[in-house]
Image 1 (tube, each protein chain N blue to C red):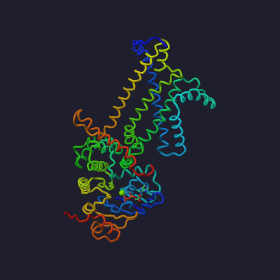
Image 2: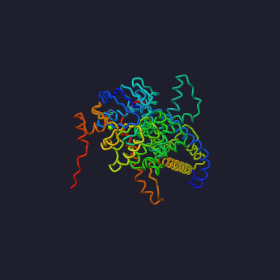
Image 3: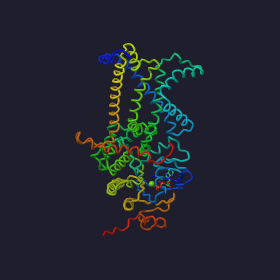
Image 4: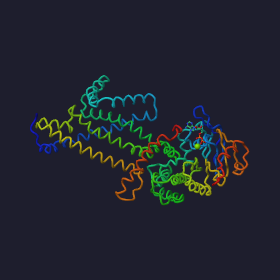
Length: 265
Length: 250
Ligand SMILES: Nc1ncnc2c1ncn2[C@@H]1O[C@H](COP(=O)(O)OP(=O)(O)O)[C@@H](O)[C@H]1O
Ligand SMILES: [Mg+2]
């Protein structure tokens, strides 16, 4: 099936595929932004124990975690316009990209909401009380004390979500979006060099994944620098220094359960 | 002057504070003693509204608050009048020692960065941490962390500093350095309410001692009165229990 294998096609496909890299990254970035927003919104009722909304956010999370993302794409692309039509809103002319980003955004939000909730509760109650005792308002305590530390705790999970999202965007081609995977399909069909197209495609995903992973690792290290003992020596002591760091990181999480409940604020 | 009037607090059905009245003069050091569970922590936490009292009045300096009608604004204003030193230090873990002290100066007192840094470095110097300004809490011993906590409280120049068992979480060999710092700032005339089990410290530093049990003040008076000639049986029992046994070495 197809033309005989030809290594040179792999390299010839690179620039053509890279033309669509921007679109893939746009989907990733757009979905992440939407996902962080949705994740926060959904985490709030659970953090503050709001009865009805809490139930609603549980249903939302179960749906997006419990069904295949491909089905979610189809449901939103074909289903949402129908439902909104009943309410007299016409979005059948909206670009495909809109549906793609909405779906991936809500999906990411479901995965992030639990992380956001857990990371915020991982910052121990004692520090929040100290912030109030210093005279900060609730908002100041959250933005200056809780949020920066929650962010650091969340980065490892966040990395996983970003990488999963990057790979999931490859399904957008099923709705006809010309992102990386869609383009590879087309190139394969056009030249009959499918395998070369897929190898090229796989290499591109791999490189982006590695770069993203590296960047997020750096961000994590920077955000968690307060949990690392000062490094006095060079590389030789690296491994040795890692032990106490891992311990204090766990301590951070363990502290979460330590505080008593305080006054409602 | 600090005046607490008829402070009540319940957790669910359990009445933890049953009408506490306490007056602390400016510059005075009041030590609160009492068995575990008697409501000492809860009382301190009511003074800065980390717990919401069910009833009562709180007067700190020129600020008066009736707990029945305390809104967000009033609570926020009340909190600016006091500072707290916690048993578990509760330093901001993502901030260095000097940043921990600066935080309140920047955010609440709205000082400039330079001014906040200068004052914070000075205070850390005073508690013996002049060389550890840039250390994170995870890089400091418990005693050092607690001294940062004390500097953080001092920086706010509050009417009163509330200490909740400031040395209970420390290894025995680190207790001394923290008590020494508290002793020093007490001598400077800073008003303090200190919950502690360190009887020796109470005897030396306190102007006034309060013994609490079961959510009420059982007995209060000068250290000599309460510690050496307690009137109440409950106070006597308690003191007997926490005074260290004579240490016979073999
Ligand atoms: N957040 C809370 N929820 C329920 N009960 C509490 C809470 N905080 C304290 N208590 C109870 O109130 C009583 C007094 O506690 P506390 O003020 O911590 O005593 P102390 O500091 O004197 O040991 C204890 O019985 C304790 O179990
Ligand atoms: Mg206590």
